[in-house]
Image (cartoon, rainbow, N blue to C red; front, side):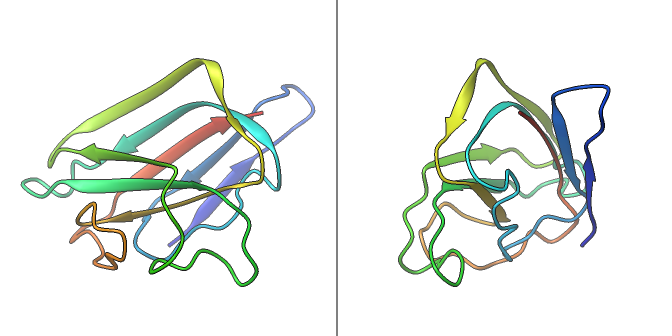
Length: 124
């Protein structure tokens, strides 16, 4: 799992690229409050298996507890598909955006997708 954050003085937007998002939560990528404008999910490596992207706007001590922390948003990405989730006016994050990707929408699902899922988040 490799996370790349692009942040520079030429733009007010930040970009986070995770090249293998799985069940381990990527914690607080916005480093507090922020506004998400788009999320690009590449699930093409999982040709026949859907993946579920789960988003949390929650900063809990010790991180997201998959058995207890309710998901704020979740998106099912079909197997072999790429999806652009666009929020033209912005998706407001009050506490901090954390995310993970699993095999099903069940609350406590910890099954990693079989292959890499690439996720790119653009936020401010």
